[in-house]
Image (cartoon, rainbow, N blue to C red; front, side, top):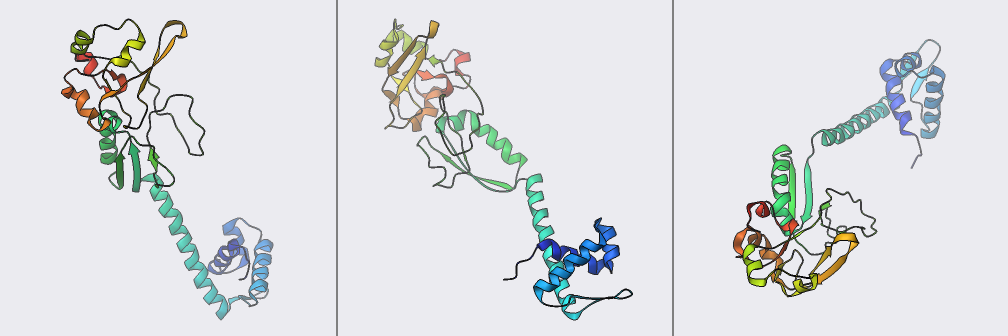
Length: 256
């Protein structure tokens, strides 16, 4: 394969279309001598004469005309490739594979996705709502939305913080009436709870108090996470305590 600079192909096209080196030099804002030298080097590499040139005449050879047509087609395709990328940047399109925790999808992300799809109708979303640990690279996932405590684990993936939110623990008035007001965090380990994690996950609450006090409470979830959304919508009958991220307005109504 002949090694060459594709810029030489483009300069050759301009020289042919402008009808000479001087005119092409003015159009490209390049010295005439540079264009003449580069075309001569191109001819030497190809082993053919592309242009017959004298002080008074400029003629494209038969081989040069054939070469010109192929170079022109190449430039047209190159421009089409750039235009295609520019169009994608202006108006997003294509398939996006997205994964998101179940409850986060229903409470927060779902309405956002509806607005996104209305705004970008040429984008097709492939959504998996799951709380399992996803192999982003191995499963070909484009975007993985996750809830993680700081500090974040090291990763080769590009990560961006979408929001920082504190967690609070809420319980319904009925549950408090039945279980009583706890005097210490350890008592909460006997309370039924609602969890976002899968059944194999260690279910725990990390609680923080004044002066940096910290307590870690392990609990048994009253419902598995697939039923979590329905529970926070009122189907739990006040039978479980829940982290604030599970709720979307219930606590302001006095239901939690």
